[in-house]
Image (tube, rainbow, N blue to C red; front, top):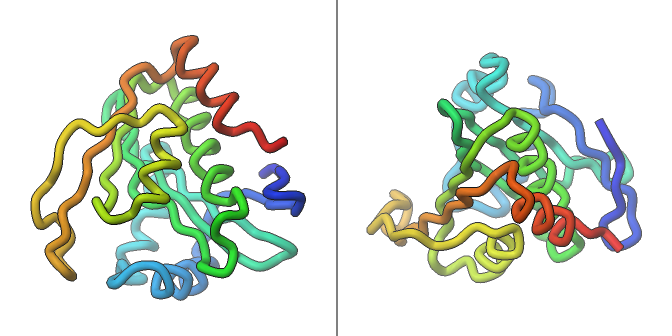
Length: 172
C-alpha cells in the first residue's frame, strides 16, 4: 500500500488478508484481555466496500493493525492495535491517519470509536486527530466491566478536519 516513517523506521501499511489473521490475533492477545475469534475476523475480510482492514509491517514483521466499519455515511473505528514492543513509535498514528484518510476518500461525514476510559495514551492519540468525547458506555467491556468513552469527529472531509489530519499525521 504505502510506506511511511514512524520515528525513522519504514512502516508499510497494506490491506489485511486471510493469511494475516493468526498474526493479528496473536498481536491482539498481547494488547487486549480478549480477542475476536478467527472466524469473526475472517468474516470481516469478506465484506468488500463496508470495511477497511489494514496491517502495519516494520521490516517485514506485523506490528499493528486497524479497522474501519462503514455504516451509511459514518465510519466506526473498530480497532487500532500496536504490538507492545512497538508502541510509542508512531505506528498507531500512522494507522489512524490511514483510516481517517480512507473515511475522507469515501465521503464519510463522521467517525466514531469506543476506547477504554483507562487508556490515556489512546485517548490522547484520538484527541490529536480531533475525536471528542461524547459519552460513556457503562460496563462496555465484557472482560472486566470497564466503561468505554465514546468519541466522535463530525467534520470529516471539511477543511478543519483536513488541517487536523495533516498536523496529526505529520511524520517529521
